[in-house]
Image 1: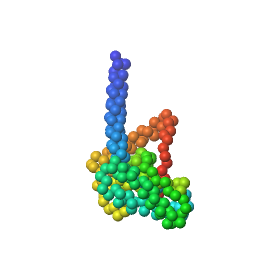
Image 2 (image 1 turned 90 degrees about the vertical axis):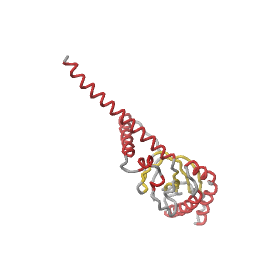
Image 3 (image 1 turned 45 degrees about the horizontal axis):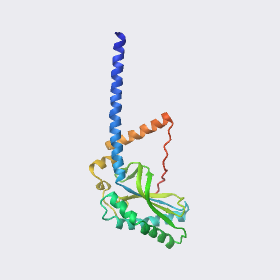
Image 4 (image 1 turned 180 degrees about the vertical axis):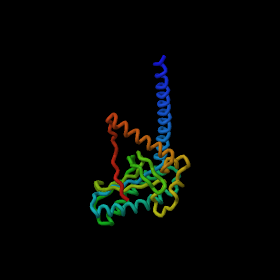
Length: 217
């Protein structure tokens, strides 16, 4: 009888712990799903310089400016990420030509390669908006061998468009804003997911493979 009395509180505590874990997993799964929806609605820009030399880094920024001016005009009427992606896909030859013309005008003999793909990006703040880490569709521009420091930003919504002054949150709905706002409940849950992932890695020794993206702006 005494043993049963001791076991019951332990069982109640275990049930409470399992319930808390289930709730935590449910909240975290919801946060991850909503973060994925945000990533699916965003297109990044990723430019890799030919090298870390001062001249190559400087021309990278001139290419950036020329490409941003071109994409701002191309995407002005795009009202969704799929439409923006299709517009960019059709314009890849034109954008590559823009990059190469900028290089040639600056006295560089190497070329540029422009493509639309998927890549990993770390979490990054743009004013009051913090985009979650993960894989995004991105316009990739490699100058020369693309071995130098890179530059990245957001093409769609136009957070980096020349002269863009709108509040970054204005491009997202209320559900997405909770994912993007530091201190929002979804941001907190995403942080819990990151901590859980780190703990699992320590416990089980699993290594996640990801592309390291170095940021410069």
